[in-house]
Every structure is written in C-alpha cells, then in structure tokens.
Length: 133
Image (cartoon, rainbow, N blue to C red; front, side):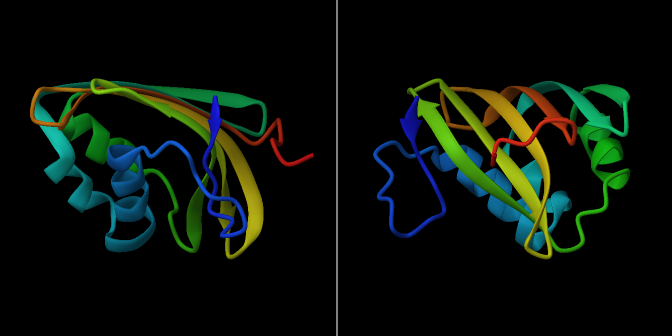
C-alpha cells in the first residue's frame, strides 16, 4: 500500500478522494451529511470492536444512520496511514483520535458506482490493536 498521512511532512502519493470526503464529513459536518455520498443501491457491513465485544451492523442508508447514532463522534478525528485507490475502489487503514488521544484502529473499503458514489462499504474498527506502536 502507498503511504497517505495527515502528517504534512509526508507527501501522499495516492489520494482517496471519496474516503477523505467521508472522513471529513464524519469528523466535521456530521454523519447526516454522509448520505450525500451514497449511491441509490448502497449497502454496508461494519464490525465495531471495543472492550472485547464486537458489534456487527449492516444494511442500507437507514441502517448506516442508525449505526452512526450509536457512536460518540465528539472530538473524534480519522487519520489515514495507508491507502490504495482505483477508479472503482478505495481502501484505507488508519486510526482515530478523540481530542488528540489515540482511540482505535480501522480498515475500510468502499466500492464506487459510475458517478463516484459509494455503493458498497466494508469497515472494521478495534481498540484492541494499535497501529501506532
């Protein structure tokens, strides 16, 4: 995978424009604005791990909004460490912070439709393994 980082000292050689927009919306404008990025046939599956428990969520846009409603996004920011992009897929691995402190590690893959909207998303997140050590 090619390096992509929020560290201004490293110049990213691969851009993941859709995932960057997705994370910017989650971290800034809020999860409700993510719906604008979704294709008409959007489906997702996510595995959210915390404190030795894993919660699975899946479905369409309504289920994604229900999933977002269960997360505390206060002070949270996504940091992409590595990414790969093609015309139809973007894959990223990184970590989240809350108010600057490391919180969790994540992996996410999105498949895009012909107009660049997210039609499929597979994501996993865990606090059990740090990608920073």
